[in-house]
Image (cartoon, rainbow, N blue to C red):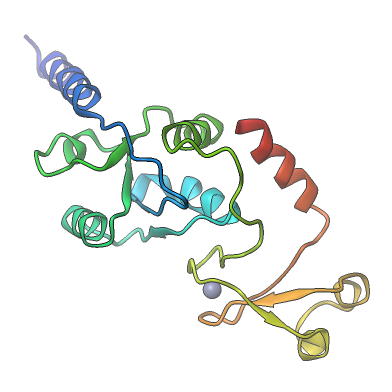
Length: 179
Ligand SMILES: [Zn+2]
């Protein structure tokens, strides 16, 4: 057997081992996640929807596992070498690399029927956004935005300012279609 063939066979075996041990997740009010390095886009979309998702492209496999275990976070991963490990029990194996499929799979596996909260979390650092008055942001947002938006939020960690904007409706439609 060629190297390529035996690698493929090993990968297929890992896939079936992972599918066999995939847990039925306990329903949780607001599931929290930790995502592997391949899932930056999924992490961002889940944060848009208001979920608590830890993500860093610097997390090692061991860090992912200890965050998942210590904080009761569901491990989101596409990495079969990681998921096949015996200690990995609380996970969702994302088989597709399409973001719509991934979101649908997460919503389905966690029995999510409603988006927790749009525009509640910083997309860059996962912090819960806090209220900030219009006056306080005047010098920090474009004039057009200041004129047309009534409410603003602030990330307490990175100080980024968020507002609802015009794409809010379309984001909501995309997410609701996947529920
Ligand atoms: Zn932030």
